[in-house]
Structures are given as structure tokens and as C-alpha cells.
Length: 284
Image (cartoon, rainbow, N blue to C red; front, side, top):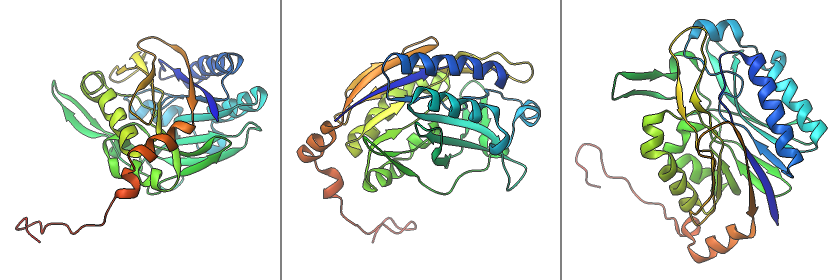
């Protein structure tokens, strides 16, 4: 079975209304180009380093115009749509959530996933991020069934945690997602190699639509992201790399490749339970 998928690469600003117009246009373009499934990047609705701007612009899921607009585009186009993530107000506390959605061709929501691993890092050059200060982490790994097989959902920094993606594969996923807004320094050093490793370890296709470029901001620090939306097969081969710029990258996935690769190197089946060393001595 083959799946025609499309990766949408964005350069979102801190204006959700403007971002929605661009995203709708690109999703329609992807569908008109033959895509059966379209994927958008992390924080499709807003890229902003300002918590004040986020508080002013973000809405709860039921009130979010980006979610409503993209559900309608999916319905009108008759496609499966993976909204990489939306920044949304959280019902549970004062923080936001970074939430991925899978939309069916009738516009209904098939699955939701809240990003589990928060990007709390200090990069060289005084570039520092504290995602957990503004966002509430998720606790539940999520898979969703589609006509082409089961998809396991992840978001950006999640890709640095192999156990999550392995668990998704062990739960039956044949396609894994990693929608991202990757920084330029980490993107240059780690983007492709991490995604290829996750694909190889799990014998899954990896689809990673990304934000790209310098993002317009009305207040707060201006962000810059790596781009290079990428599709990787279960053997670790790069099928498509969007490079730089805003646009749509189409790719065809041969889902039979998953079974062929897993039969050749059955690392999921060969896994064994083992005892861990004691932290204090390093011995059993």
C-alpha cells in the first residue's frame, strides 16, 4: 500500500490570523497536488518567544480559529491532516499546551497528543529556552489508526528520547511524526541524524514537517528555525528534504517497506528485558 504524503514548511509569525491564511493555502495546494495526508509543523498557529503575546493571542481548543479553519480545509479537501501542533490555552492550569491533532477527511478529530518532553536547554551563545515555564507537559503517548496503518505522534524535542518512539513502534505504529520548530544550531548539528536514528531503530517511516527562517515578532525575542522538513524510510534513507523556504514537499511512502525492513533486522522483536546497574556502584 502506498501513501502520498505532503510536508508543509512554514515561517509562522506571532499573528495567528495571518499564519492561518498561509497554512490553509499550502494545505489546499498539497491536496490539489495529490496528497492523501498533509502534515504541518510544530506551533502552526504562532511562533513567539513572548509569554505576554502568547497570553494575548492564544485560545482554548474549543475556541481556537486555527483548529476550526484547518478542520474545515481537511473536510473540504477530503484529506487526513496532521496538525503538527498548536499552542493553546490549558484548562488545567495557567500554562499553555503544545498539542498535536490528527484530523479525518470528514473534519473530525481522530487523535490529540500533548508534547511530553519540554525544551529546557541552555545553548552556546547565550540562547536559552524554558518551555516548561510556559507549557504544561503531556503524560500520555498516543497512536492513531489510519487507512495506511497506525501513526505514532511526537513533537520536536521528543525525538531526543528514543524510548518514546520505540514504545510507539511496539504499540503498532508504522509511521512516526516529529513536527518541529528546531533551532538553527541544533538543527545544523542533530536534525537529520536524530530522525534517521529513530527511523532505523523502529523500522518506521519518519515524517517531520518544520518551521523555517526568521520569524516576525511584534514583541519579544525574534526566533530563527532550521527548516529542512524531512521524510525518512524505515532503512534510514532520506526520501525528501525541503531545505529552506516556505512551501510543500510531496513524498510517496511504500508501506510494505516496514515489513521488509523489520523482517531483515527484527530489532523490535529481538529486544530483551535486562537488569539495570545500581546507580551508586555501577554493578548489579
